Image (tube, rainbow, N blue to C red):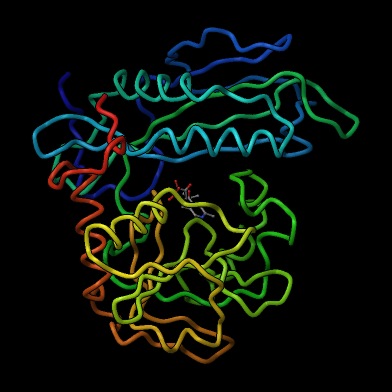
Length: 339
Ligand code: PLP
Ligand code: COI
């Protein structure tokens, strides 16, 4: 399929409508067969559960063009499983794993013209999502759901791409203890909107949230997990109120098996950050975004890697992960799904 005539290199992280979306409806206790549709709008009752009680969730993954010209996705099975976990916690219908993976394949195939070419710096972002669609006025889960997947070509999540960013310790929380921080519920992102607008107004790129119970431990940002480097150690925060990032779980394998680093997933205290050499955010959208400085209530924690470029270990992790995703480096068994 002929590629769209787009300046791929200048894309930011925004929405561009592509040819087809995938849609499947859950009604009378079962999912229909699902179809690809050119209709990118949704019509529903003004009383739909999602509109009042935020019964919605989503996922995010990407399609890449590899060095040898194939189109692939990265570990879609993990996104399928995470969405199943999310739906169970939100009392939503569960979309089966194999159907999720097949729908991802089908929707990417239908939008081949929109998959950015190898080396362009852009990728096709794939956004599966689901919402409670029938009318509900008492507080209870919907009986009907719509599962959709939209795709959109994207560039870097943070302007400046691989340039280190400046984040702040947030006084707002995104998740409650024993709440929904560990699942990908839309409501978690609603919670972060005021905090991100406020952070941007004050000159910061992102918020770093602390654990809501004691406010002494590092959690994550609004859309990515945190990673730290100390000597040869790759350290990530362990918490049951952060999202189990596919990127972070993959980087733990990359750090250990490809780079020979020591991997620690443990509680990370705010007051130990100044002992780390490098810091970054990781996620599907963020890939790895280096963090140069963290503002803690007016005081800057500056990482030795600085504000000019990615630290050396972060760069190795970035090169290896993206090398695996783009087919330059052999992937562990089962990580790459060829479309
Ligand atoms: N944490 C949050 C809050 C996110 O929204 C995301 C994005 O999906 C991540 C972490 C990173 O997860 P993943 O690597 O699976 O994209
Ligand atoms: C992702 O990385 O896929 C995300 O969902 C993060 C953000 C765009 C919400």
